[in-house]
Length: 230
Image 1 (cartoon, helix red, strand yellow):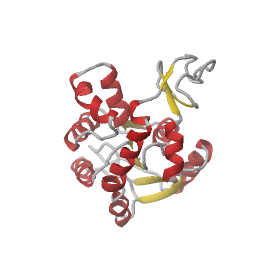
Image 2 (cartoon, one colour):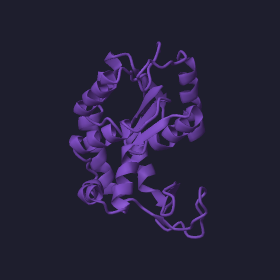
Image 3 (cartoon, rainbow, N blue to C red):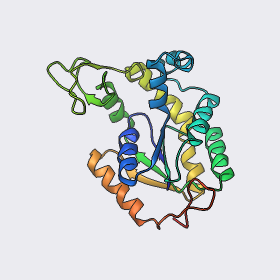
Image 4 (cartoon, rainbow, N blue to C red):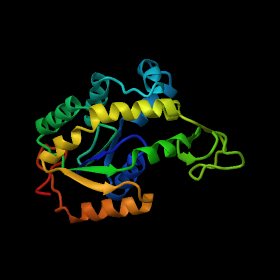
C-alpha cells in the first residue's frame, strides 16, 4: 500500500502519517523530519537547507528527489507513506517514474482539506519538544510548567519556519507550486479528500475508513509494493 498525504503546512500530515504507519506497519518517508534531523546534526545538507527552511522556503527538487530515492532503496516490501512530498509537478512526475520503474503503484493520495487562516493561527501557536520533537500548542514558546506528553521533557522551542512571516511565505509557495498537484492526481483518479479541520482522532477514523474500503493489496514479484485495485 503506497499512500501520499497531501495538504498545506500544519494540516496534520505528519501526525496522520505516523498513525497510518503504525496501524498498517508501513515504511515512512517524511522529508521535513529528515531535513530537520540533518540540520540538528549540522551535516553538509543540514547547513545547506537550514536558512532556506527558516525563511519558509522549500529545498530544491534535486535535494528532495535525492532524499526520496535514497530512502526508497531502503524501504521494505510492506508499503510506504509519503509525508511532505511531492511539492511540485516535477517531483510528482519523477516519483511516479520511480515507482513505475520498480513495477509499483501509488495507490491513493489523501488530501487533508483545511482553512488557511485557521491554520496560520494554529501554526503560530505551535512549539516542539526539544528532546523528541513532539508538537505542542502554546501562547508562548516556553510552555512553563508543562511536560511533553511523549517523553516527559519540559523544554520547548518554536520552529523557525513556524514564525508568522515564514508561515505566510510557506503558504504562498504552497498555493503557487503545490496546490496544482490536486488536479494532477484527481485526473488519475487517485485523489481522496478528508476534512482536516476535525480532531486528530476524527481525521484518522475517516482515513482508516477510506483505506478499509480499498481492496486488499498484493505484491508483485520483484516489486516493493503494488495493488490489485482501488
